[in-house]
Length: 103
Length: 474
Image (cartoon, rainbow over all chains, first blue to last red):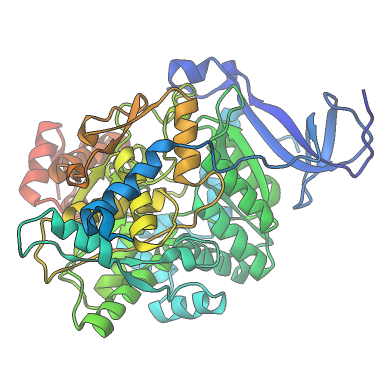
């Protein structure tokens, strides 16, 4: 497993509450799973993915957890093509201004 | 460090941690067994309108444009008999520094935290408020931590919430992301205790007072431009702060005749604490999953006494379905050239329907828009819905079933805001007051408090109390 240097920007994961420790009055499906947490920071010592590590977050807190991602980045986007969306504008313009007049 | 950090241990220190983290002793405003002096709390711990305008002005918050939606008004008039169809205006709150009206709440909260000497601020929010607090903390030089409920147990996140995490980080905040569950509050308390930072709660008097400038501004803008107050103002309602602050601002402007309408996205049937249903919804805020419980029990929030008390101000509360809000979001882009975030358009969808009930010479104002971007966009959200097995179809949105389908109106005439019975909400509020305070005997001051806090008539309140076996003594 590739070692990551101290100071690398990473994402960690931790279990905050096991199913047994969770609050009462939760729906059944939620009660069965743990409460999990993710946060990001700089590695305080050399480590590999899957190791229990300590990080220093951007606000300076020290947090422990399992190293899950190195150089984490966002990949959320504008989604896939949704053909229904196109129909809305066409219909509304037709109602408002009448088909071919809208040119 | 030998404090009990278990769930029950930390929750047991709740009020102590909160007192440290908010800097307000709420007990001085409390009386009887249920009541507290709301106006005194707002007066003594909030800021004056002028102070708020100055605080917000220093960070470029507020003074957003009021835009007339001429094409949407024309469209509404095509669907109504002659003489109907009010003029629709929208307050473009997306032009605030962090992209939503939440900048107004955050500006005051962060200013207040700095004034009291806190080194940082923490907020528990998956919504636009996180970005607003992070943006303000950046401007005012404080550290910032945002705690989000973001993922289900398979690690799948709501795109809209992931986008907000990105935005918070862009402003230099630390983002702590959690899976589904109300124990987010436990993590939040632990962070407050560990850091000694300020709880930039959405529900403090300064946070709510921050929205008063919005109501005030829109009254002034209507007077300058139209020579009169608006007839109706529609506010998207979740935790109640938007309604409360806006209504208070309108009252401060002397616009007391304006009808205040709350609007929420209908998520009936979806349990907000359900892991499995978390990604079956397409709206993560502005929905009934917050709107209903917070209206009927405001003090469920993260402070002992919430300053957001929507029943005091609401004249009407309507719901719209997910498909209707997405439809109006596209309509706003296609007919008005304004591409804005879907959740903020909840009130717009309601207003489009309500305008059709009103006369042509009347004015209806939608009091917010929010920014849009990757993840927080109708295509991203509809695409995500389809991936989660939700059917997206055209039809009659009244037939939409949350978590099963999203029905886009097959024709704009099918878009209809649906009324929530206000008296049912009020009755439920009274019941919650009795049950949550575990009282069997109260005094008449408590009764007056409940009457004011729910805008219910006294006879109805007494009736419910009697049914619940509560006696009133003096």
